[in-house]
Length: 268
Length: 285
Image 1: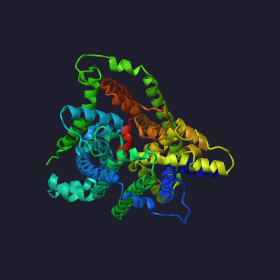
Image 2: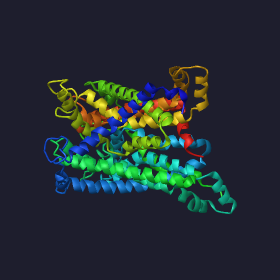
Image 3: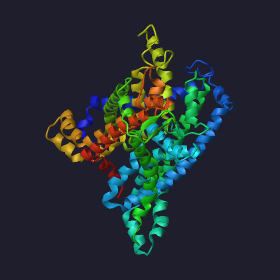
Image 4: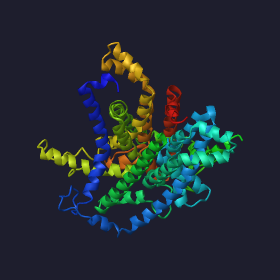
């Protein structure tokens, strides 16, 4: 720590801004979660004695939302599998690319910055021209472009655990490139692969704009929810939004805690 | 055995090119074709009608307005994110720093739509803020401009994209040699002097990268305007949806092309000036 940051008002100001940042990210969705436990129709914080799961039980009857959820789970699983596989290959390639590294990194990252609506529209006209009817696969194709940059970055970060000396040692002992990958690299980056899978899954599950032009008959969950949110929001939508939000937080927390445990193990 | 670097890159390269870049190049080309009302599609005759239509019906002002909102969002995110990154890097204990980084990582993987939607409960007529303001007696009537307004859109955009600014800033602070800050101080510089003359210049690349990330994400956003904007509020992505409702392909393609050229131009210039990719090279070996 730098001594010039010791002045108390200064530290207070820095922490205050941090708190404001976290509050605007977390307060509204957490308020929504709290509201979802209120059995009244009017959105408000429930009194402690009123807390109820009414709207969560009501979810079971929302057929359209449930089939949309199934579709989204399918798309997310496919997206996550392909994104993790491609990200692993891309990260291994990065290690070998020498002075081309930066360019390769930019290339894989760029699709993330294309506005979702534009990416979805361009894919849908191409698919339409080649006669490919929209289905879960066309949605997954657009989600892949969104998830891949994150999966790639995560796996690349986990590659830090693979010291060059390990690979040199393996190579000196006569291990082929393939043996080095299977016996040295993959075990070391396993947490990164799991993280990439879960992150890609969540990115796809929660992605809204890209699917707009690419869904077939069956909506994805965010599209179905968007419709509900804008048609006189029934409180069941709070219950669904709240559960998806909490589930996402739990999944990411799991990944981060596992990564931390793994880092400790490696340092020992 | 030599490792198969290029071969490993091939599948990703193909997918990113075929699904990512080729469709964008195709719509760039098609934006110069002619709309054919007989087939509801376009035919390969050169036309600038799509681009001419951008200048009509206030469409140009939607583009400029969207970029303006994105700029404001990015600026606010830097102002909030810089101290937050300082807290993580300079002030927090190791444990707290990890916790803060986790808290700023989580939002990337939650739903932007749900987070924007939840602001309706906070900013609405019967929302949290109006409730507080009335309870405290600051206002008698609920404030109407809190929701379905540009104010709400900007708040929603900052909340959505703030995490994008934090990580480039932390990475750039990690690259600042602590002895430089100590030296500045030993020579008698105040905090502000050290901040202005040492820390700020050395973290320039992080500031720019963070600003650019937020700007690009916000410029392409749709959800926040759809959830929180007023009746007339628009944004580039929403305007493209409106144009597609009347299947005006050349216009939708022309808008997309203009926007992509602006965004990619900024990314490439930024990368040239600030070597953004270097920020992330600390990651490996």
